[in-house]
Amino acid sequence: TAYNLISLPLEFYTSYTFEHKYHFSTQTVKDWFKDYLKSYLLSLSLAVPIMEGIYWAIRIFPLNWYLIVSIFTIFLTVLLSYLSPIWLTPLFFKLKKIEEDNELAQRLIRLCNRINTKVKGVYEINFSSKTTKANAYLSGLGNTRRIVIADNLLENFTLDEAEVVFAHELGHQVHKDLIKGIFWINLMYLGAFYFTSLILIKISFYLRYELSDISNFPAFALSMVVIIFLGGIPLNFYFRKREWNADKFALKITQKGDAFITSMAKFTNRDLADAYPYPLIEFLFYTHPSIGKRINYAQNFKKKIGLKCKKIIL
Image 1 (cartoon, helix red, strand yellow):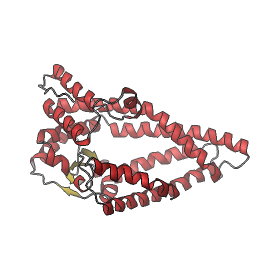
Image 2 (cartoon, helix red, strand yellow; image 1 turned 45 degrees about the vertical axis):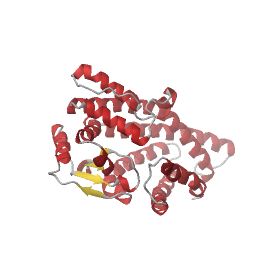
Image 3 (tube, helix red, strand yellow; image 1 turned 180 degrees about the vertical axis):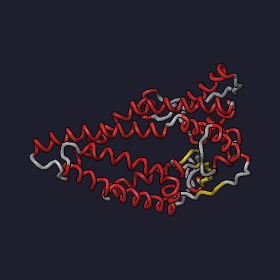
Image 4 (cartoon, helix red, strand yellow; image 1 turned 90 degrees about the vertical axis):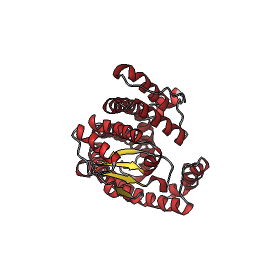
């Protein structure tokens, strides 16, 4: 709670003032604070039992607590992925099912059928109530999986562009990137918990207090942040490779190189994204290849699969 109060001014500037300055946000101050309160209560409802559970594991299993916590982390990650479209997303957005006779819905369902992926339907999400940004994605696991399309994308992208954007997301489904991502992220957390346990043992020994003492929390938090940041560098490299594969899938299954390139250009212009970021920044922080590289890739890819792609310079 103290951290939230201290960080509130910065959070308000970055996600409200800054977003309005560049015409990204469509929220009023009242709506922003309502969402902030929801996020805070949701985070609190998860963080308190999680931290209690971690310190319970440290008390009961002082040498192997990191294994217990890692197993729970896997369970929680899968559960939240499953519940996301039916519980988490509706807390902040309204979803409306698109009729099956809609042309775009039919296109997207056909794409899913081609790779034997079952979905609950195609849903429009009201991104425009909060932002001018656009997106399309598959949400949920198993019987909660559904196609979600932002209303901003429906209004500002052509049918071909919307189809190829979704085809990219479908590529992640084909390559089982969600499951693989959950595996690698949780493997990173296992490593972070393990090395943090070694650090806490050393600190407790030198300062002569119990391993489960709450006084260890600053060391616990700092250790986790540093290790996750370092572990995130190779993980981001892995994610960028998966994005390349999803781009390749989208181009091959739709055969719409022009639509892919113009959709990337629209994302760049609408979001004021840096098409060609400094290489070190991209290497350290980007989970996706830069849009400039993705456009260049699509333009070069036509030589392999015979697509006619527009030449766009950003």
